Amino acid sequence: MGMLKFNGLDKMYEAKTMKNVRRKIVIAGGLGFLGRTLIKHFANGAYELVVLSRNENELPHAKVVVWDGIHLDQWAAELEGAELLINLAGRSVNCRYNRRNRCAIMDSRVFSTRVLGQAVQGCRKAPGLWINSSTATIYKHRFDSSNDEKDGLIGAHPDAKDAFSVDVALAWEKAFREIDVPGTRKVIARTAMVFGSEEGGVYEVLRKMVCFGLGGKVASGRQYVSWLHEKDFCGAIEWLMAHKEASGVYNLCSPCPLTNREMMKTLRDAIGVSFGLPAMRLILDVGALVLRTEVELMIKSRRVVPARLEGAGYVFTFPCLQGAIKELEQKDKGRK
Image (cartoon, rainbow, N blue to C red; front, side, top):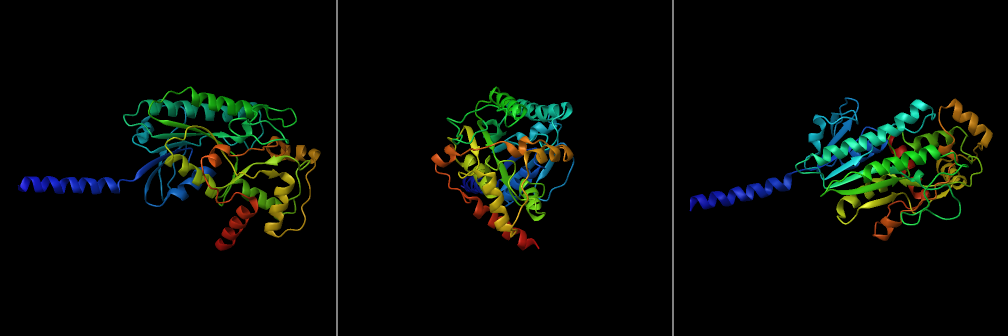
């Protein structure tokens, strides 16, 4: 009788312990802007956060494990039992596309995807969901209609000077699709530029431009800009985790893309700057050379919409840019 009582208590203890087990999220390339945004979002005690990084570092809410993004090593054990593996690894595209940088941009994405695939295949208990990054830049430069996951046009356009970027996106996604990982749900996240409060993000750069009086239209100003607020980036990741039927390609962007002219005006109005010098194409070419970047990042029309997320019922916290910028500005004032 006493033995039965002990077994009952033991089962109760086991059930209670299981409830207290934290869910594991592994973020490859997690020290960049998007990785830090996710860490801040999930640092609520319910998750065990593991970051795979090329550099040793210490984070208050995550364990950092060193990897090189190429070779299988002891870091692979961190994937065991993870609820989510998200791959954000990749050399920044904010540079000149010389031969060395092109190789680094391509290889850092393709090689990291392949070696993560090897690690997942070697797991006894593989991650339940693997989200691999891609980019909204994969869609064609256009002004007429929006690109969704089903009918969006994919490819480069000479006016956008985006052939290399599209090649990278296609190779990145191809590497991911070729990996067979039975039992692991796979999602490709074609992410637009994310506006957030972490240092090093695109919003920080745009805000500085506006404050310095450089917040006018870029080139014609007609090119469309697809974007996403940081809360909806994290919200979409959570949604993908919760919906076990979700797989394949998802566009992570606001449902309301707008032209560059409209975006810059919205920024100026929110920040309280009445005028912004426009950047004509000749100035852009010279400026990109001086700043060691590429004009494609500023002139390509990215008119992308999140048809699958919206169609499945995801509700955006910030569907329109005005509300998104207002929230970020309030947050910025609160820190001062």
